[in-house]
Length: 237
Image (cartoon, rainbow, N blue to C red; front, side, top):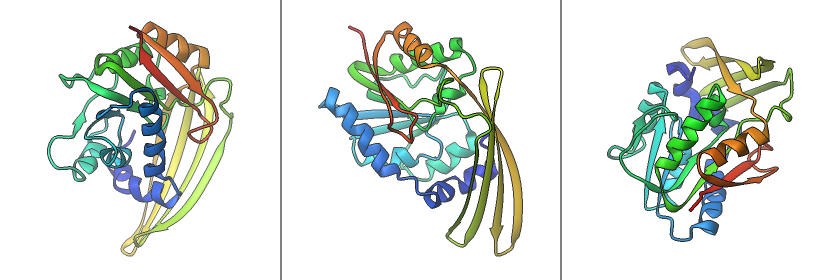
């Protein structure tokens, strides 16, 4: 999952598909500052190649990122001076400090494979949050909103590349299994590779219960983030 070939085209592909990282980051920053007006520091978990993190860096005094895929980390680190992006697992990373805001975007929380792993991740997020801080989580599709057999396809032309992406998603043992095929055409030739992504299909109630177990009071905002919604949470006093 999230290998070198994908990391190399990740930014170009999502830019070509129209993903607006700066608008999403601004939306999330507004959610944070509505609840913590003086928030100055932020850590983005599962930050991939750091596209959201670059946008957050223009909105917060200090940012950091955590990503489990080493190829993604290598791409992300080229965008920053200093040690900003850390190789780590959302379930057990330890940065040795706390932040005013913690974010986990793009449905990445779904890569926890059980409620126990979800609990571990949210507890780890809580351990990195200052008192009065805010957590924003963009969940993967709920079990009740996932579309079985969903097919998506795009062809984008960016910076001399033509990239075709086709995906098919199925429900397997309480998880979504998305198989994605990429064809990349460059002046020197055409390459093809495929990746498979598993994500847990938790119910909304399972998420809310997990937030409570990790010591958060969470509010769910429906309809945002491409329809998946967003959870905005604060640690209980």
